[in-house]
Length: 144
Ligand SMILES: [Zn+2]
Image (cartoon, rainbow, N blue to C red; front, side, top):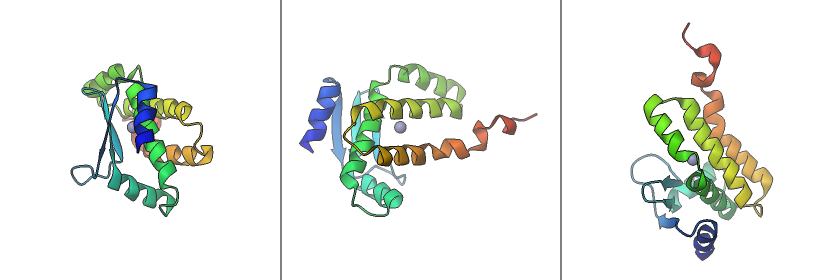
């Protein structure tokens, strides 16, 4: 995992990276970024579970880990994150959450050009599916 640490330090020397076994609680969370500590945490078991669920096996676990890490790096480097988080806390709008997630994916992609683009796009699409399927983001679903 040393290359994960040097990758993170290269992108931002002030950013911390922690590796833990599993996310506390029942949710399956592969990684998270905490703005207050400027730290990314990866959860090994949760990443394996997600990888198996999405790709059917652990064959591409290493690539999947890179994508999760780059996504969290995307949050860490997003200059709009503070403002968007504030807006999200105020309005609770799902469209603001979607913007936060899309920003992270856009930044992530620039940092891992060595990862198969098709795999990256597939995982990005799957992770954003929640938003495209949500009636909350369809204007037609607004109350009259
Ligand atoms: Zn995210």
